[in-house]
Length: 205
Image 1 (cartoon, rainbow, N blue to C red):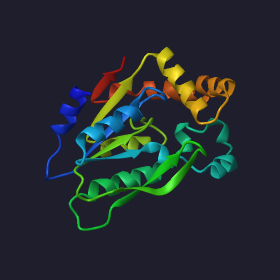
Image 2: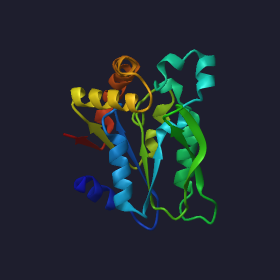
Image 3: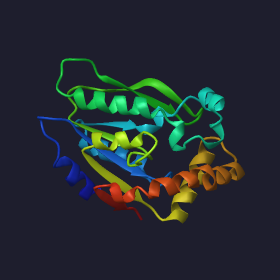
Image 4: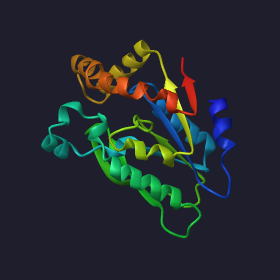
């Protein structure tokens, strides 16, 4: 964490907003890392999580994609890109905060305008699975990130953490394993193929 903090802190200035991307497979620990980084940089940083850009479940059902929620095409990538553009442009202005959606894991739904990125915050940390994917519209987002990290974690540890997280938010042990080893693992393969595009890779224990 000290190394990550040093790298990010060195990019922060009063002249421009730096947008930092932290990617990794489900359960790798990118959310925890991003939260800790923002806490250490407080009040100079704000956190935006890509999960807020999930398509609503009703829309996923209509599109026939609910059974693989979390895949690249189950997010509103156009809105995500537009939000990144607004975040980049919103620094140092007299305008309002940039409003960003959150995500409620208990009901698995995005929460509109849950977070506000104030115009005086010089660093915004973006955490999400598909920040470095080069297809499906995601390829238009990577250029909006100034600095990128990819979080690696041993698969056995990552899967156990992921299963435990699914259980914590209401799934049975059996359903948690099925989802982690099914849709989540399919997505993990897509995400892990993007690791070489990151500026830095972080190996967690």
